[in-house]
Length: 60
Length: 550
Image (cartoon, rainbow over all chains, first blue to last red; front, side):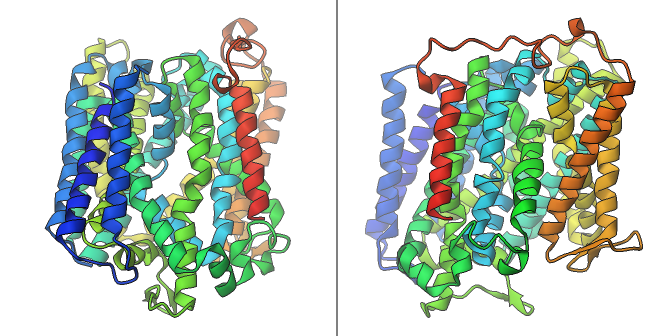
């Protein structure tokens, strides 16, 4: 098994969930005005995408 | 703190992936070595991250954040001084013997290098310690989830234990290692936003430095005198006790971490595992310790954040979770708690997979039933996984009932561990070291540790031998000195006994001792594939970090 594949999908899905939540709910944490779900979700989706891209490019 | 549907969805998604990885890897397990040692087939990037994650349990994450708030950036010494140098040493100097001897475990190496009794001593204490420490961390997690989320103690520990059991039972060490990597990513991605948000809110490093005492933002400056810093330690015991004895004793001899490197697909991978792990290890303080320092600054800045009180002081163990509640909205909060759960599971799986290997090979196969077919040992390995987890759960309940027994056990295991590195150092680099020397060195080192505790007092602890030879300002300082005395005694006694007993013939020591082991010639490879240049790069970065935060 190539671990990059499940890791990639996991973070892609996790990122997607957070991005969806960031648009559908206006929940904010008490101490910050930043849209934490959007930023963190985007970072996770990018990380997941990179893992998947890396798994296709070369066999490690 | 309340969780919503999306938080629970994230937790369930994570459990699904973890179990799925275990299920897919089930097909790869045919022999006891596949199950217990991964059949030496794991790629380098995976072994290095697992090397790090197996040590990154929930207690570590929660405890480091707590220490950040309590002691400041000095806590980073547990990484920069108390881990990196030893990780470099084990990769560059010790791995050729561990991996080259083809031993399946650290106790088995002791058997090959020394004798049966030294192996038995190490195997039994190590097996006891792994079960015990996974039980302790289970207890800590159950307590925290009860406090923060209102979950039942039993429900949270049984749920996490059952999941760890399923994926280690099906896929063995490979499954534990693969999941540790996923857990590592989750810990980093789940906690980094918290560090960033907390530090920004506290005004960056400058803003934090302005609000908290200077001692919290320097790692070396206030180490000259133990009364100047909140840890109550001075530079010698810090460097010799933590930086040398305790750190090398853990990173270079503890099978829990060494096992990850030994699972690598070749010698070069095994040697580079701790070296590659050193890069992320160096920056971990920014994710786990700095949020704690930011919490203290936030508390003093009148932002509305406070660390919960406990008795007369503060409950530092709640710093991480209270920060999450303040900075993470529903969604990211689920990720943060899942990351906490993941760190707990990686620590527990690390203990369980080390326990089942040592029990199966070094206790069962050696003393209970030798010469059985391999399928029998595979079955024993699987059963031991179940028993190990059951014993951990039992320990967690015992900890809940009898705190004093737990403190005592922890102390005793500390005594056993402290001298270990002297035995390995002499065994690997001085071929004259004998089995009797190693064994009596270990026993007397352990006794010296107990005696040091019995003859010194710190914060009301110790001094049970009647007279008091020294008083330390903190238990941490006392622990460092216990380690120093234990190591020195073991070192001296091992040499003395070795000189009057007869050593093994050189022919029996091939691949076990320096001078009789072929170190692979890697001169033709690029620098990043060679252990020595990699270690030098790590060392330079380490010095730079220490200068910045001196």
